Image (cartoon, rainbow, N blue to C red):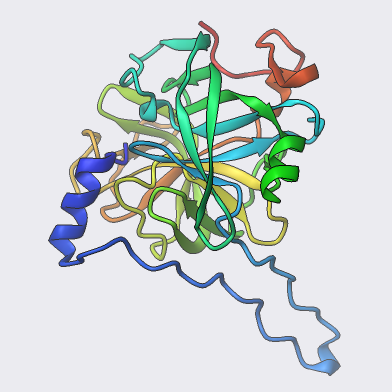
Length: 288
């Protein structure tokens, strides 16, 4: 797991940095093809920090699903290992637990414009995936009218290798841009195992404190994953050093490479009013 606050400062000290990294510029569109090829360059959206949030020790984002309504209670997504109650045990799934956790809402420039508050932890786990979803005390419409900020939409289809992505950290107010390199059949870290994880290309050098950041498809602006870990020291399958395990059980260690957990399976588990329903058709999230 990407270590939270304390480790983030250690990482910066080692790098010789005195402050958080500056906001990186979004990846620009590729140059237009020559006219005689009649090939159009992909259109990329300018990803910003708008809609991201800072937790006490991690990052996150205000999210909605394709079928969410503006009048629904807003949701914030982060990692399961970012829960204020500590890491869930393997096999542990938390649902609909009271919470008053707060989140600092950022605008496109990374300025904190509001403090949002949870009414409950709707879902949290580190089994098969690494995610937490909080329900807030306010609606998307209220956030939009008060602060001019819209939620990020969670894509409900599997991400694609080669996609240009941005990892948007509300904690560090920093954007990391790279591409999806591929997918790990199983990603094992300490006692936890995650399924079908996103592997970044080496350009996304995320650090402690970026845990829970939304991974945004630059062509659609939609969230396709949630940032959660990276292999820091080249060790195999230990905490902060996840390893990839293929279908035959072969283990691969990629020092310096970072990972995220897919989110396309989450929308099916939230129904009318953004309420969690783990028995809903198509919902495959782990159950308590």
